[in-house]
Length: 167
Figure 1 (cartoon, rainbow, N blue to C red):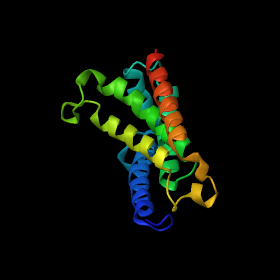
Figure 2 (cartoon, rainbow, N blue to C red):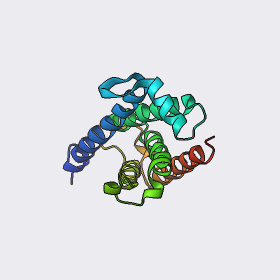
Figure 3 (cartoon, rainbow, N blue to C red):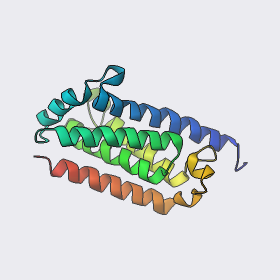
Figure 4 (tube, helix red, strand yellow):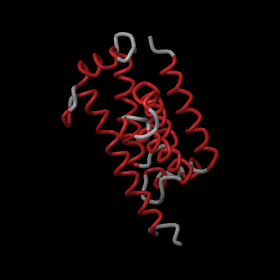
């Protein structure tokens, strides 16, 4: 297995770009109304209906975390930080929207949220691969079990905290 240009690096690139890129699009929907989204005003109303006070702070936090986390993952830039943003957003979403509905997404459960958390943790552990800004900038030390665990702990902890402290 080659360390540069081998299939694991290409596989990580495909995974990062597709998952991170798609994740970021959800943030652009929330913040700007792009790609068929409701924009900040509609997202604010939606978050208010979910019990997040007036909703504006929650809408900005969620949208920003999705854009920054998704683009960070897609680019392989500060990968554990990007992963933590994704993990936190999906943890909050799982509790707010889906926890009471069980696991399966067919019943509007938290299955998809869980998959995205696992993908983010796995990429934080494995690292973004050779085709990434982290590799280009010499930040390979950011990958591994410790950064992955820290990303998971920070993301789950902050996501749960956001859910638990909603108004």
